[in-house]
Image (cartoon, rainbow, N blue to C red; front, top):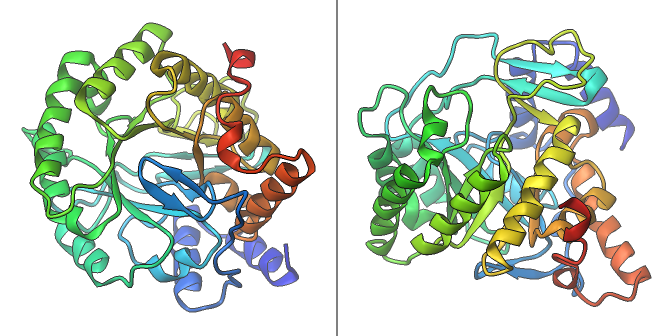
Length: 353
């Protein structure tokens, strides 16, 4: 981490977290954040669900909700970027404060509630972007007051799908009431059927992923895997934030919302391994939750992931973490004589079961 980045993070941590979040996006767009450009090698480049990734380290949804920093994020060292969540209509989300740093726990709690400018505005920015080697995807959401939430996902995909490289169905945010109920097998199958119909109508069908919660028991995970495979999804992202507060020390530990960051690593990796077992390697998985080092990426890969996403660790370690992780993975693969990161996937799943 450079001195400039260290000073910037210190300044951001002295102000309200949501204001700091917005300022970090402004800094990115203004060119104030040093960016490494594309980080790749023959060991890091991997194809996941038909997407050619320069490296397996992606940005999780939620940071750039409105797709306002697409160009700098593509130069930040990520192998792929996911923006959103986008809902059909703009919505303000939940009242502030709704974002909390848990510094002692290296964690974050948020209860944003899908605040975003809506599919039309987000889609226009996605359509105007200059395409490059870093795939860009969109997280699909549903409006809080919608009487047809399943239809909302399909509508956002129909509107924005032509302008992205992949899409993610987000039924696992804990901050929209009853949204997680859509993870039940019957409701999920019906929802995915509508989404996949919308995908089939796109000029260029794209991979569609499903993002699930970490607060699921093994039988629920197995049922979701079965529905996802039957629906023809491209893969599953595991996981979203958790409602658990076990072992937290920070003063904000009892705030309502989804917890992300370091405390989520073990829970999310266990879900990932159970998904890998349930799918038998037939469905690509993307591991998310608590990643802040190359070693943790490799652990997610060994548990069954083909790629990973990071977010909360950036709050504490800055954007320099991204190329550091990618280059650290590359060095570890070289030291072990492994020719490509894909060879690691699933090799240590049993340790998590």
